[in-house]
Amino acid sequence: MLGYNVPEPDEAMLISGKKRSEGAAPFDVVVGHGKWAMPFFRKVRFLSMALHEASIREVCVTTQGIQLNVRAVIAHKVGSDLASIVNAGQRFISEQEDEMNQLTGQVFSGHLRSIVGSMTVEQIIRERDTLARQVLEASKREMGSIGLVVDSFQIQSIDDMDSGYINALAAPNIAKVQREAAVERARADQEAAMAQQESLRNQADYERETAIKRAEIKSETDKANAEAAQAGPLAEARVTQEIIREQSLLAQAQADLREQQLISEVVKPAEAEARRTRILAEAEAQAVEISSAAAAKNNRIALDQQLIEQLPQLVAEAAKGLGSSNLTVFNGAEGVNELMAGVVTQGAALLRSLQDEIAPRVVDHADGPGRAR
Image 1 (cartoon, rainbow, N blue to C red):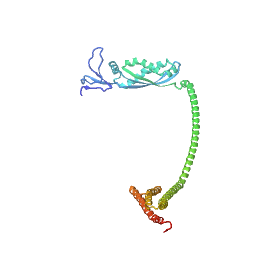
Image 2 (image 1 turned 180 degrees about the vertical axis):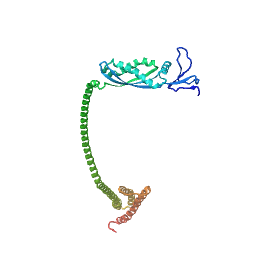
Image 3 (image 1 turned 120 degrees about the vertical axis):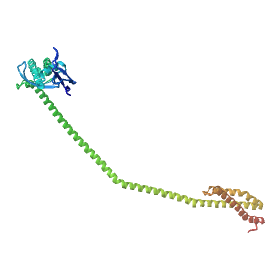
Image 4 (image 1 turned 135 degrees about the vertical axis):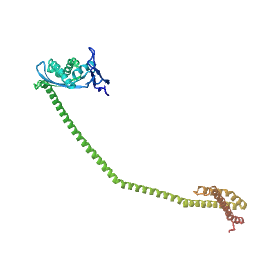
């Protein structure tokens, strides 16, 4: 905009041309905002407040008379206060960066030579930070008078101009370091050799254990293969044995069953028949005895009465014989009743048979001993 100017964030705007009272700043300073400046009557210039860097390389002589080549870097800028901006604007507004760097280098070079001249080489090497701090403190007043401030001062290198003094100072330490390095290297080599030997031993042990393990696995595998090869015949033999055992048990069961069948079908009926025959024979014998006794008495009525009295005993004997026989009775209670009815019927038939058999004899005896049938 015409007549209105705004400085950059790292700039200070200097407006000259306005009449000033005695002791006031020769120009207006504007930082961080814009301002109107009447054209043709006011002149506007800009002063950089950015950070600048100046390098110096100076030959300095120590208190021992030894020349040292010192290189350093200074980081500087225009101060942010009004007095510093005015001082810097009056000195560097035309050739800002070159003039600032040159003047800053001259200021620091003079103080660096002065302070190095008061120190020994050993002090400078050991106390480099102290040297930089002393140079910075000595230069602060002069830098402030020209409106500059120093952010940092760093000594980059110090060498002895090929005199060999610094190398001579370092030689004992270098030798010591080299000795310690050699010792450490030897120790490291020894440890490496021991580690290698230990590794070889471990490898040998591992290979031995691996071979043993492989042999064990092979033995177990061979054994398993042999057992697997024999498993079929052994299993078949066991199955055959089981079949034979089951067949034997089946044959034994069949034999036991057949034996029971024979006992039930042949032996028990034969025993029952024999017992029945014996009972009938005994009953007949008793009947003969009774008939003889009746004949002696010559009393048919007495004989019948006696036979009737003996009939329950005969039936009981028949039932007793049947009870001790191993007979199978079917139809439950009905079968038992039928069996008992049969026994009673046989008893009645026996009684009639005995009456028919004995009656003629009794008649014969009654007629007299001389008559015979």
